[in-house]
Length: 113
Length: 116
Image 1 (cartoon, rainbow over the protein chains, first blue to last red):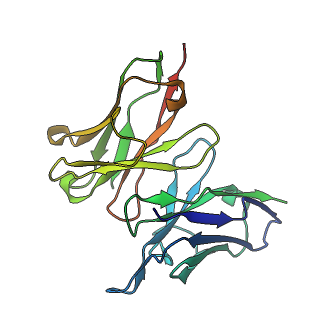
Image 2 (cartoon, rainbow over the protein chains, first blue to last red):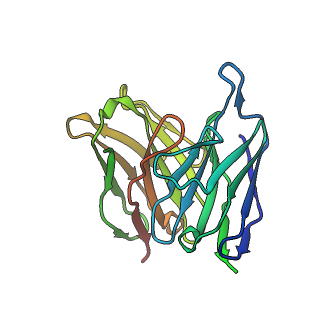
């Protein structure tokens, strides 16, 4: 199974500041035949289901603010919130869909400092 | 617009069974896989498995074999999760989610509480 390791477990960032979350996979999730990384990021606010923010490691979903960006390839990935807003307080999860079983990171809780 | 609507909260005694539903709308049902994800209280997301909406063939993650059954009713564009011999550790929110790759959208979740 591919283990997804997120860091940090939590972080507190000032409004307007940058938040950076890392996700490392225990195996490569780059599908060489099409050059795509099979890695997604989700946002989960309290009492709500997860919401897909980014797929293919860096493709932002329609309607997701452009302050959210994803980067990385192979085994190392990053979710960046360029200017944290109050509504971004949530838990963020990475997810690999390269192989079964699908696996998620343990989540990173983002709070306002 | 695709939408997944799940059935309401359940309170069950240990040893009982429960059947959760996830009704889809707004897209062609057989075009995407449907997945089940568990979230225990205060914990992260755990993938339980998926069901092929073309064939009805389910695939279960390790730890979700035996007591867990995924099924379909294509006439009403709905997938089901049945859990038998419930244990207190099955207390969780259960989500369905559409997708062969990244998951979107997700159902709102069904809270299952197992307690005597």
